[in-house]
Every structure is written in C-alpha cells, then in structure tokens.
Image (tube, rainbow, N blue to C red; front, side, top):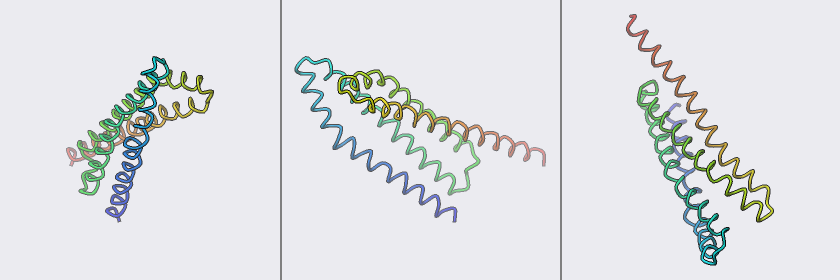
Length: 163
C-alpha cells in the first residue's frame, strides 16, 4: 500500500512540472517580447516587466530543485529510510528552496504593485501576494516536518543506545 501511495505522489510531483514548464516555455516568452518592445521604446514599464520576468525565470531553478528533493524524499520513504538524516537533509533543502522562491517574489512585489497601478488591476497585487505566501507556507510546513523528523531520529538513536 505504501508503494502505491508514494508512486501516486511521485506521479503528482512529475505532473506538477508539466504546467510550470508550459508556462515558462510558451506563456512567459510572449510577455518577454512585449516587455522588450516597451523597453525599446524607452518606457519604464517595459523595464519593470523585464525585471519581473527575469525573477520569474530565476525562480524556476529552486522550484525544480525542490521537486527533485521531493522525489528523493519519496524514494527514501519507499526504501524504509524515512527516519534518516538523508530525509532531514532533503526536507531542509526543500525548505530553503521555498524560502528562496518566497524571497524572490517578495522582492518583485513592489514592481507588481506598479504594474497593477498602471493597469488599474488591484487583483494583480493579490496574485503577487499569493506567489509570496504559498512558498512561504511550504517552507514553514517543511520546517515543522524537518524538526519533527529530527526529534524522531534523535529519540530513535537514544532508544537504540539504551537497549
């Protein structure tokens, strides 16, 4: 039963990569061409778009790194190594990747506000806040799991020394 659930989670993690790749390959280049057109005309808004897009492209690196660490963690669970230092390390890397993504989106949030003011789209700021909050929530969740797993490993090692 455990292998079925970890297989399902692995498929879900792999399936999560597909829409993100589609966004980065097909949708964002269209915004990039629009931004460079505006930037070529000397408009400040074009450079703001360009800054937002560059940060969005940078965030794909920690995102895919976190997905890779998630797949490694699921592999550890399948091999009955869930309560190991390797799992704690994978959770730590997931937490740090989520923090990096959250911080990068927090940095561009003022730029998103400028674009929202220009376009008269206050909902855009909410989308920007979600892009900051979602990775932060994942980082907090991974941090809690990391501490819980670390304390379980410590208790396990303490019990092994007692026996």
